[in-house]
Structure formats: structure tokens, C-alpha cells
Image (cartoon, rainbow, N blue to C red; front, top):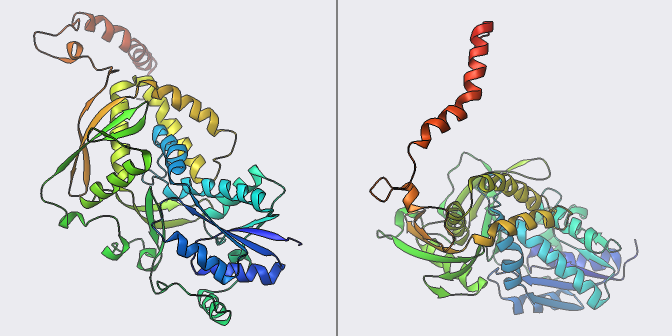
Length: 403
């Protein structure tokens, strides 16, 4: 295979640093290192410089935090998409964005190939490669960690042999991934699904047992399903998520222990932290129940599940998502208002909600003198509603059919 210049998704860690040199040796190509800042709390200038030191001819850092939230996180939130009933898909949502930006870099820097550091066991390889193929099918896609067959110890030896700086946290027993929307943790003791997660697996959230003894209340404002304010102050998307991560994490909110169905067909045990996500999903769902009718809510539940599968399975750029987004956006036209959430010892409980478009009617719901519900209509309603059940039960009795 002949390639001249490769754009490599670069994190600054062991795998991708080794990949720079390995790709150079294996393909005789120049490497353009591409680091995407989606809120991973890293020193991106150091990452950029390290890539050049290791051997990249170009090192690009792209700040994509705001785009990540507005174009990926908010659509998933509006859809109500949660994978396996627990996972808010921080990593799943970040990968198609990274792949998009990498394709742009290939055009800007004249690359004829792209590469990533994913292994053959994970989901991310699919998310990257499906996106690459969708956006530029002419690009050659390389997966060095899937090709070279080195163990972790062999990688370290390779790095030492080629004087590649080794990260100082290689003794960390966990494999983690972080962006603004969430943090994942796996491997080590967590690989036994019966082991309780040690506190070392968490970084964003206080142990609920050690969380403040007094609850804290936050008020979140939404416009057409999108969070726009926190405690009455308008905030941009990045600032809002970051602030909620800090506040909710302090109260131990957002810890998830999940047995997850990977796309490649195996189950894995994952620990997630998503403080802002836990609060925003609770608030958004509650506001929908105030503003949307029963039939729309029921259909939207099935759409939410399908949306989550689509995102998790790497099909962000497939043909289905725009159609789902059109439905979701239509439902969100009246999902505007403010929701008050109580944070306490690991829980986020909605305590109140208001909207200019409520379907709740005090006059219909109350039992006091303001009641305007026609109670006399109930008898006829029950008769008609129960008629099919009455008919089929009568037939069963007449024909002697078992219940």
C-alpha cells in the first residue's frame, strides 16, 4: 500500500505516540498529528509539541468544544437518547466529530490517508472508519494498533528504543476517556462485573456518602429543548455543561456502573461519570412531560432508543439520523421553560417546573372549587372504553374458552 501523508488522530498517549514512528517506518509516509479539544482537560500545547518531537511533520490542535455540545450533545439530549438505559454516550458522540475534523485536515494538509489508535476490540474503530468512509471514501484508513500486534510491554520497549517520551501515568490500572460531556473508566479490577468500583475509578464526582449534608437546588432554563441558562443566568453551551459538571459532581451526581453491549458483540463493564448529563436529562425529560401530549411522548420513547443505538453504533452520518432529528425538532417547539432540580447525596430529583406552553391545567386537575372537569362524562366514557373488553370476555364465556 502506497501512502504519502497520513493524518493521525493524536492524543499524546503511548499508543498514538508509538503510532507516529511506526507509521513512518511501515509506510514511509509523513505524519500530520491531529488533536481535537472536546474538553479533555489536557495541555494541548504540550501535545502539539510532543507530536513534532516524536516525528510528525505537522501538529494540529482544533478547539471543538462548542461545536461538540451544540451539534452533537444537544441533539442527543433533545432526542432523549440513552444507550443501554444508562449511558449518555459521551465518547460515542465525540468520535464522529473528531473524524469530521480529521477529514477536513486531510484536505487542508494534502493527506491521502487517515489513521486512528483504536484496537480491534472496541467500538471507536467503527465510529471513526464509518465516518471516514462516509465523508471521503477515497481516503485510505489505517489502524496501527490493530495491525502491529504489540503488547503493552512491547509498545513501551518500542518507545524506549526510539526515544519516544512515555506518559507518566502508565501505571494507572484503568483505561479512561474524557470529554466535556463525560468520563469513562474500564479495565483492571473493573473487569470483574461483581467487584464494587473503588473510589480510584472516579475523578469527577464526590462519593455520595461524603457529599455535602445539605441539598443544593439548581434551576435550568430551556428553549425548544436546548439548555440556555443556569440559576437564572444565560450561559453558553460549554460554560453551562462545565458549571453543571462541577456543581452536580460535588454532590456525587452522575455515577453510572454499566454492563454494556458493545457493537463488536461482547459485553463490557464500564464506569461512567456524567454529572451535567444526569441533571440535564432529568430536567429535560420532566419538562417534556409538562409540554408534550401522551401520544407524542410514547412515540418519542421509541425514537430515543433508536437514536441511542444509531449514535452508539457509529451511524451518525447514516441516512436515518436527519429524519429522526426532524421528528425530534418538531416535538421540541414547545419544550421551553425552567426546571428546578434538587441535588443531594448522588441524586438529582426534579422539584418544580414551569413553561409558557404547559399542557397541565389546574382547572382540570384540581379537586377544589375551581374544578372544571365534567365528572358526569366519566360514566359514558368508561362504557365506551370498556366495550371491546366486555364483548371479548362474553364471547369467551359463551364458547367455554379458557382465560
